[in-house]
Length: 226
Image (cartoon, rainbow, N blue to C red; front, side):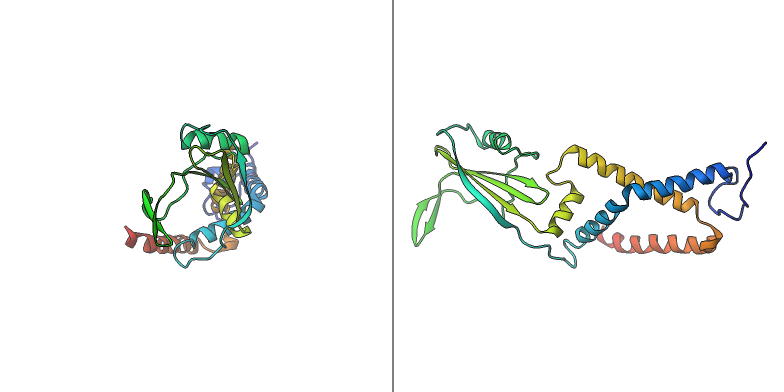
């Protein structure tokens, strides 16, 4: 006994061979459960995506970093062979999840003599490494030969934290893989939503116009930049 079929005009984008009660029921379940799985994260990703989209053009300020705490940690003189060795030590000592990186520097590095209060002085060599966190960063400074390492933690506001969660900044591979499942849920919802389009939502021509207009707007905004 064959399963009952839906009217061919009922689901415009489902092939006739798929228009069975069991198939449509599973499409609806997939659509519903993937939406339930990622509901809160969809809200987070939508907010962070909006903020990231405005990080350059029509920029939305998310606040400047602010200092949370700082201290000097005692070490042996010449304990580190180079800046990378210091970074590895700091990662273990401070329990950081991310890797130590040289901080972003505006302009070329300044070496040799510099003037201070009108007098020339030789700038001491200093090693600096930074660790990124979802809600801030930790900066580590060390002057070769000294017996202390300076560490400083800076925090960021809620909007910056939301952006960092989207980018996976300072987080483990588990978080990255978890966000992959959220991306997969979005894909599943898009495909099942497309297949479940019915007459109740308008004609097939209307659907084509909406999709075509969306693609045209996207291409119109992207193509001039290439």
